Image 1 (cartoon, rainbow, N blue to C red):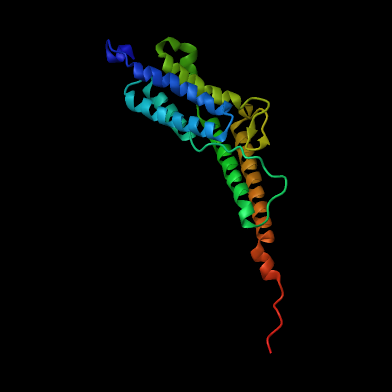
Image 2: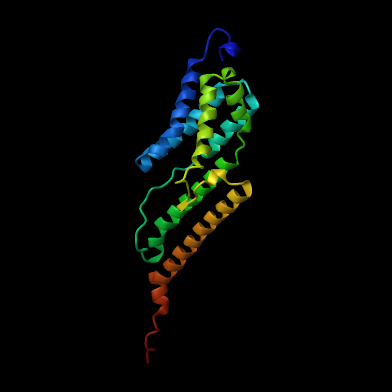
Length: 215
């Protein structure tokens, strides 16, 4: 950056880049839904501000692609509501479960989006010429690569389903796992809606026999 902007390094950009890298880690350790939501919102805003200030990165095209991906991934927060052992009756009882399933579905799609990003260029830069990168650039590359590395862990999940070693699978196998996970969510959604329909007071009123006719 000093090379590009002369003798006046933009310390704001440096600080923002470090801040983005830190914010990307915070949602993983958030203890409450509110803390995770705040971290994800701050991350998205920081990425946008950083990119607006930074006009000419070395390796500009690859980094722009990475930043755009990060913006897309810094989306709605995960929900951590505990599922009730017994579903509540009626449509009102289905609302929280449908909402939770929507969040699970979004997280599956988010992990699929992380998995499909090609980071080979970024990894090559880190392996062969890391000295050409500023600290903030290196941290951004490493942060996204770390997100992909987590998909190789033994306890990785796609939604609520275990997906051990997901990151090691072939593209075709990953695609199948994602489709299976989404199908499982859809099956749960269908079961919730069927239960809601069957237990709704509206269904009970329809099932009641008509009263005696007036003379």
